[in-house]
Image (cartoon, rainbow over all chains, first blue to last red; front, side):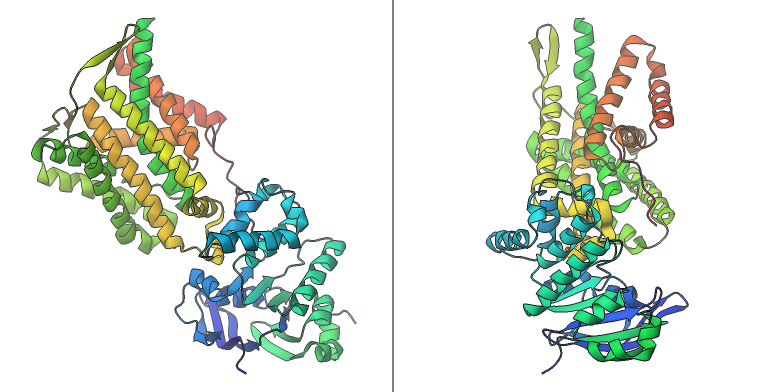
Length: 236
Length: 291
């Protein structure tokens, strides 16, 4: 079976600086794949390139079709939804409006309503705050809203950029429990994380990035026991 | 007292014209953080289309209004596509300078086509109602009525439609909007369409009040409308309307109760005073520098 997402020789340059140098990876249907790496390793650049927010070189195929030249907003319609780094809630829009905007690509009002109900069932806290401006939510609630907003487009691939960033340990546990639940239900996930211990426990496979290149890859369980990973990311 | 109410009515009329133009400045600023200095000249083109419709084609009021709004809408969308979009990722000052250039270009194309000032014939039967001693002309009634209707329509578009939701999202965090599946370029074109259409309508309203027009009317009226948007808090739609009515009132009342030559002096003094105490305008949000 061909992978859902197949990235080959991806490069991202910021002027003369090469942030991502020829990175290749794949995500198969139903997998939860984790990209690990320190700050500046190029993780966020890879996700931005994948969503079409920044120009990149190399090839990317998603769901059997080439992504070259596909603008960012059409990638959402094709099934890639991203929960960006720092959540990036629209602070001036209400919780409900944030969610509805996430469902922009839904053609019918009935489907939109159905998805809104589904997301609110998943995050009951949000239904208590529907009319509240997004900017007034706590960090944890904003993260739920960001995930809910991404789910509103019914993605085939849910991409998350450091979902645990800036959250209390208890909330980090809650977020990862939620991702594990999504994975169990068959959703395909691509997650960038610095919390390697947690990510490697849940993921199917992982890639380790250093200075814009992949230095290690394999099943998450194997990487967990890799001495290099243990020393660099697990503090062992 | 009757004199005061008569002047208040004039203030609402002038404020309505400023409001229609100020909305164009504030909406473009809201989505692009760019000031489109050609907007005053879009308004001027609207006044000239009004002249063409009324004096050349002898059309009645509503078709003239639609002609001006439609023509200036197309002008605004084309300007964005040709002159501003290629500079989307250039330093902001490049786009602002370009807009000044577009304005001068429009003034001189119009000048080339119309070397002499033009007179716009009355678009409506000219008579006045007596409202408790205050005389209300058909022109005033049409200006205030049409402006309120257009502003209400804009309010509905921005707050009750899917496209309006996207526009508000863009004003908060443009970079993130494509991740929602929203075609941002189309939404920016829509912003220019809406703002320019209102500017075209303002050209007709202005032409009814001051029927002798030349290619430079967009400069001072455009500045006044821009000042209105800044007083209200540029980027804020309600602020632009509020600022426009404040400015219209200050201008009319200054001219009514002080020597009329003080008018612009008072107007711009008000701007300076306000900006010292409230740099983000009356309803503007404090700009947070993103890291």
